[in-house]
Image (cartoon, rainbow, N blue to C red):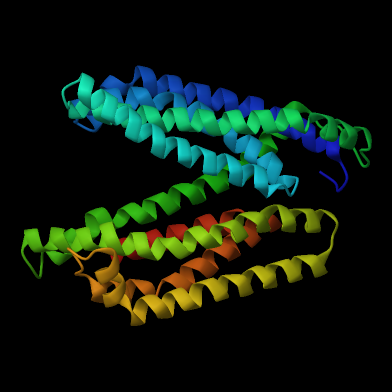
Length: 336
C-alpha cells in the first residue's frame, strides 16, 4: 500500500477483520466442543473442562480486537489501544474478584467452579475491550470517511491477494509471539530438572518458585514499560518507509533505542545493587532470592533492547528476523 492510500488501508482493515473473525470463530468453536477431549486426554485434568469452555469465546474477541488495535496503531492512534487494554485489565481484575466470591458462596467453595468463574471474567474482559474499540471506531467513522474520500495513490487489489499478504505478515508475527511464550515456559521444565542434579527435589522446586514467582515478575516490569515504545515504533517506521523517508526511520529508531537504554540501565543497576532491600520491601515474609534477582537483572537491558529492535524490524518489514532470533534463544536455553 502506498502512502496516502486511506481507501486501500481501510479495505485491508475490513478484509483482515473478516478473515480473523472467521479464524477466531473456528478457534472458539474448536475449543468449546473439544474442551472435554483436551481436558481429559491432552491435559489429563478433567476439572479443567469448565475452564476451557469459559475461555473459548475469548479467542474470537481477541482475534477481532487485535485487528482493530492494529488498524488504530497504523493510524498513529496509540491511545485507543492503550485505553482498551487498560479497560480490559480493569474489568478482568474486578470481575474476577466478584465472580469468584459469588461462585464460592453458591458452590460452597468448589475450586472447579471458581476456576471457571475466574476464566469467565477473562472472557468478559476481552469483550469489554472489544466493545470500547467498536464504540471508538463508530465515533471516528466520519473522520475516516473524510480521509477515504481524500485518498491518493489508490490501487485496487483482489481480495485473495490481500488475504495472502495479511497472512504473510501475520504468520511471522504469530511465530514471534509463540516463541516468546515458549521462551518463558522453557524454565518450567529445565530449571528443576537441572537443579535436581545438585540438590534435593524440594529445594529445586523452591528455587524455581523464587525464579518464577518473584524474580521474573520484577524483571518483567521494565519490559512492560518499554513495550509502549516498541509498539509505537512499528507503525511509525512503516509510515516512514512508505514515504521512503530514511531520515525519519533513523531518528525514530535511535530515539527509541536511547529511551530503552534510559529505562533498562537504571533498572539493571538498581536491581543488581539493591536486590536484597527490594525483596525485603516487597516480600517481607519470604525475602530469599537476592542472588537470583541479581543474576537475572543483568538480562533486563539486553531484553529491552531486543524488544525495541524487534519493533523496528517489524515496522521495516523484516518480520522473520525476530522469530528466528527468539527461536535461537529457545534452543540456547534448552541445550545450555
